[in-house]
Length: 298
Ligand code: R5P
Image 1 (spheres, rainbow, N blue to C red):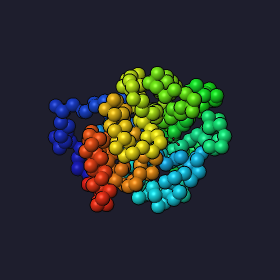
Image 2 (cartoon, rainbow, N blue to C red):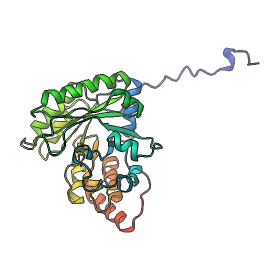
Image 3 (tube, rainbow, N blue to C red):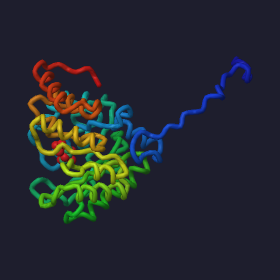
Image 4 (cartoon, protein in one colour):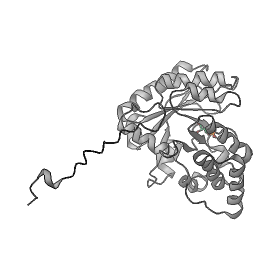
């Protein structure tokens, strides 16, 4: 039989107020618990930043360089990522279901590299996203593109569906071949995504005034790595972005097309989570590449 429930046997610690801390991510304080929990599977609550390992390129490129065998080339890297950005086909077929960090699901698609790329539709149902236990759905937004309105509508529908289930939406700003990649364009594109409900936004780093892009976007920004650069330049890019207000990187080719992908993702982590200088991170990359060693988890 349970003890009698007397006030004397309890300690309410009435002199200690309950914590009432703001959520660590910019613009996200008023979200519900489930959404905050999923965002915490993407962004590290200690640093407030993320290293997303992006390998969704096959959704329009097929087996591009570095992604010919995701089981062999990418699965060994997933231990170093805060979250994975990928398609449902690769998730189901190739990623071990024992993976417990955040999944950011590529949720738009349609045209291949052989066609007009901006002609995308929503490519997943919300039931499927829930079934796959994803933390966020990623959708391409083509501001200034031929199918601008439809791509925005794709995003707002995913925002509505995701919000019903506490699943975040990543607005991915896609810049057309003929468009100028400058801060003015990035401010426009990222702000539109945030205004229309994206939980966070992916964009490209620009050399001039990038801090105005992060300042004018009320939700976190992550930067895409873009085409393969020498490792020193890619580490400098990541450093510049986070020092100018980005909440991390969504990096693909600069990791999986590196000569030493495991060394590179660990060097990127050091830049993003530890504010390591690009020079020290390059030294770390070279050391890890040469001795094949794994750094203690950061
Ligand atoms: C494009 O195919 C995807 O949205 C990628 O996830 C994104 O561009 C990041 O990959 P990368 O660093 O290779 O640009």
